[in-house]
Every structure is written in structure tokens, then in C-alpha cells.
Image 1: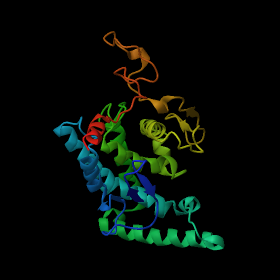
Image 2: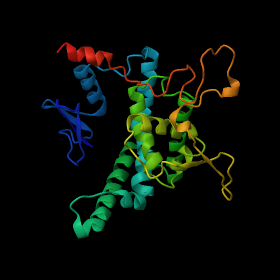
Image 3: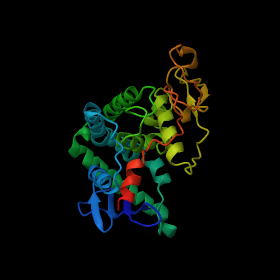
Image 4: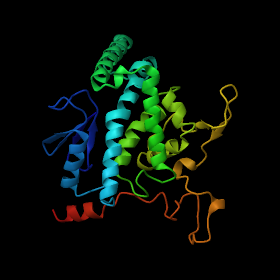
Length: 288
């Protein structure tokens, strides 16, 4: 993804293309003619320029955990997804790939692009080390990462608690692939089946921050954990996609003084409230 930021009526504008940064990396941004590449450096740069810090509510220990999990996702889980997308599930990926300017040769061009990318991914995975394992071993590593994320999330609204952090952006960007771009694969079956809290987490973020994002599978039904391979019963997600699974209504103790509704979390706060505190940003803009 190529991202170009500008100071105009809109806070930023995205351009999606194949152009890489000077370091040969994606993503990269250009802000007031200043170019920055690499997710971590981009976040640091924007925090300084815009005066917004999504991690300001995290303590030193939480920041350390957040960084450790970020690196697990970016440097380990990422490669297992890349394997599923570009090696094991290449035919489905080719169907979803959109190329402009291909004309009558678009199908051939998609085939060429996919197989070139497959070769690149396999080479990079081999250099990383994870590509030297068998297919079953790679998926075993993927499952361990996904179970770790599900355990860390638990029944919280976001990974680090009730407030959004940069870790959520990282995790959502990776889990979204399992949710919506890998149909019929092991990660999709896992996230929409046994690890349902991750599916609810993805839906919660998608509907909150991208309300215009309509997906063909918006009425997805999820496999119940008790379903057998031969006879699967499906359970609708209902409205759980919009809130976290904290304790059940029946388990509420007398110490809870708030009125609990499906659009509140376990603290009683509305899940539709903005999680991004823009006060600092507003003050920053007024001081200009």
C-alpha cells in the first residue's frame, strides 16, 4: 500500500499502488513532502506531527507487552498468513486479485503476478527460517499464534483493555485476512469457529471504524464448537460482533451498579463511544 498524506480538507488521502519506498518497503507515507517508511517509524512520526498517541493510557509493562506481541504478529504470524495466501491458497487469491490495465490479458496477468509472488514469498520464508518447515508445521505455528491472541484478548473489548491502541491496528490488519480474504482455509475456520472472540473483535473494529465497509458475508454464521465434521450446526453471530463477551448477564454480581445493555462493556461504558481521544490533537491544532 502506498499512502500519501496531505494537509487539506481531508486529514489524509490513500493511494494504492505498487510503488515502494526508497528502502524498497511498504507501507510508506509522504507528509508535507517528507517521506517516511516502515510502520513503526510512520507511527512515531505521526504521533509527533499530529500530537495523537493511541498508547498514552498504557503503562511501562503494558507498552512492553504491546511491543512483544506486535513483533510476534509482524515477524512470525505474518509469514504463516503469507504462506496461506500466496502458496497454499494461491488459486483463490488469484480470483480475488484485481489488476487494472490488463484488458483481454488480465487473467494471464493475474496468473503471472500470483506465481511470481508465490516464488518471492517462498524464497523470503526460507530466508526467514519459517519456510523450512512442512506445511503442517507452518499451520501449527499459525494456530499457536492465533490461540495466543485469542487468549490475550479474552473477553476484553480491545487487546490491551477498553481503549484502542496501536497494537489493535496491527492485529486487526493481520486477522482481517483470515476473516475476509482466505475463504475455506484453516485460519478462517479457526477464527470463525473455535476462536470466535477474535471474529467478534474484527467485526467490532470493522463496523466502528469502517461503517461504509460492506462485505458480502455480513450475515456470516459461525460454526459452533460442538459441530462435527459430518453434521455441522451453525450459530448466527447475532449482535455479538458489536460488543465484547465479558461476563454473562446471569453472572453479574450485586457489586455492579450500572445498567448493563448489549451496547455496553463490563464497565457500563457504551461501546459506540469514540475510543480515540482527540483532545490532544485539538489542542495541538489550536496552538498552530
